[in-house]
Image 1 (cartoon, rainbow, N blue to C red):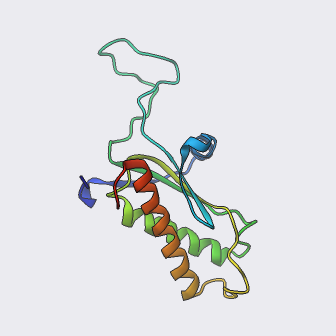
Image 2 (spheres, one colour; image 1 turned 90 degrees about the horizontal axis):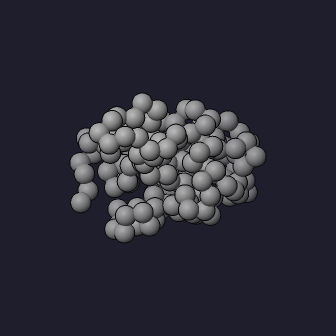
Length: 155
């Protein structure tokens, strides 16, 4: 069942610790890969960092996002995208893709990471329509693969 878009809330990750938590979770957190990107996902959990809690008591040291809240982040290293214009284009495309696919994605923390540079021979401009189209199609395919892998259904 796909929930309506209004019931899904996107929140951008901003703390370094959150990025490290998602990226450091290992191979089990990898939801999908493409030639240029890797998509990582950590589902919402109710685990406490201090262990269990008494029955009926509400824990005070746990952050519980809403069931349909998506915490999203983007990592675009300068190593793979030298120009700021290109990095900004990639970030805008990623966040737009999260917004388009939010109703189908399961809740939790999502981080997409650039893992290879785009060919400068093929895309000489730092911000071109051709690069936008290629990035959009690749990221959409990445999100659809993640939905299939994490939920067992098509986006």
